[in-house]
Image (cartoon, rainbow, N blue to C red; front, top):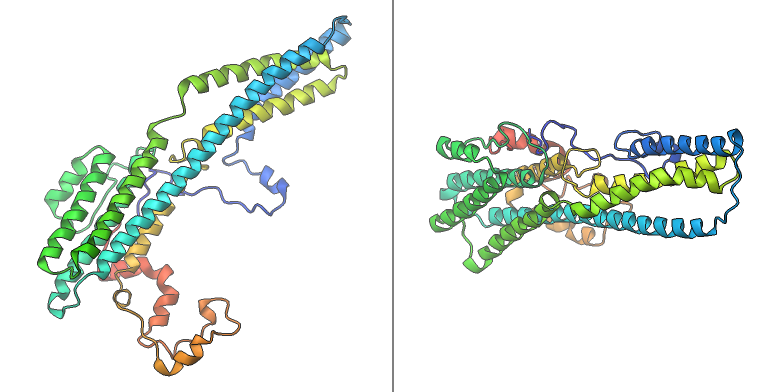
Amino acid sequence: RARSATGDRQAGAMIKYDPKTWPVLILCRCEGTVVLKAITWGFPCSAISFLTHFLIFDFFQYEFDWDYTNVGAVWGSFTFVLGFLVVFRTQSAYSRYWEGAMLLRESRGEWFNACSSILSFCSQDPDKKDAVDAFQRSLVRLFSALHFASLQTVSECDGEDDPIEVQALDAERLAYLRSIPDANQRQELLHQWIQRLTVENIRSGVLDIAPPIMSRSFQELSRGATAFAKARNMSEIPFPFPYAQLLTLLLITFSISTPMIAAVVMNARVVPALVTLIVVVAFWGTNYIAAEIESPFGSDPNDLPLRMLQDDFHNTLAALLHPLASTAPVFVADRAKSTLEGPKGVSSFSDLKVEETMPYGSISLMRKCASTSRRWSEQADPVRPP
C-alpha cells in the first residue's frame, strides 16, 4: 500500500463538502475552520466594547461634546488601508494555492505520459519477453518512487523514518537511496536512474523505437521535474515576513481601538458590541484564511491531498502493467457498422452490451480496472509502491 508523503496523517485528504447543501450544515463543521480562531479575538473585543459603553454612558453618565466627524474620517482611512492589506494577502495566498495544485497535476500528467510512452515503445519480440517484463516493472517502480520523493520535496511534514521502499531493488542501491537525507537529492537520483534505465534498454533492444520519438519521453520527464521544482517555491519561500509582521501589528491595533471607538460613537448599548464582533471576526478570519492556504503542502485539513495524489499516480501506473494494457483492443468487424452509428440511451460503460464484441474478457478488465489495479500489481509481483 502506498505510504503517505505527509507522515502520520493517514487521512491525507482535503475537507470535502457539498456547496449546494444547507449553509447551516457548513457552519456546524469545526474541522479546518478559521472561525473559532477569529472568534477568540472577536468575543473579547465585543465584551470590551460593551463594558466601555456601559461605564462611560451608564455608570459615569459622561457626555462628549466634540464632533465625531474627524474621528470617522481617520478611522475610515485606517480601516481602508488594513482591508487592502488583508485582501492583498488573501489574493496572493489563493494564487499560491491554485498554482501549487496545478503544478502537481502538471507534473503528474507529464510523468504519466512519459512512463506510458516508454512502456508502449517496448519490443514485441517473443525472445525478449522476459527482459521487457523486467524493464517495465522496474520502470513503474522508479516512476512511483520518483513521484513519492517529489511530494516529499514540497511537503512540510517530516514523513516516516523509512519513507521510500522500492521492492526488488538491489541492496546496494537501496541502501544508498535510503542514506540520502535530503528529499531533493533523492528525487534527482531517482530521476537519473529512470533516464539511465531507459538508455540501457534502448541499447539492448528492449525499447524498439526511433531516437527522435524517444526523445519526447525524456522531454516529458524533464518538464515534470521542472514543475515540481516550481512547486517547491510554495513550501521553501514563505510569505514575506515584513508584510506579515506589519499586518499583524495593524490587526492588533484595530482589535484594541475598535471596541473603544464603537462604544463612544454609537449611542445604543448592544450595537457597538455587535458591530465590533462582526468586523473583528471578519478581519482576523480573512487573515487566518490567507495563512492557511498560502502554504498548501502540509498536513492540515485545508492543504492539498498529497496522499491521494500518490495513490492515484501509483494505481494508474500499476494498471498499465496488465497484459491487456500492453496490446491494442480488438473490435469485431461485423459489429463495426452498427457501433459507428452510436448506441442509443447509453449513459455509462455499464450500459454498453459489448461482451459479444470484445473477446478475451477485455470488457471485464475495463470495468474492474480502477478497483483492482493494486491487486494486479501484487499478483504479478511487479510493483510495491514506495
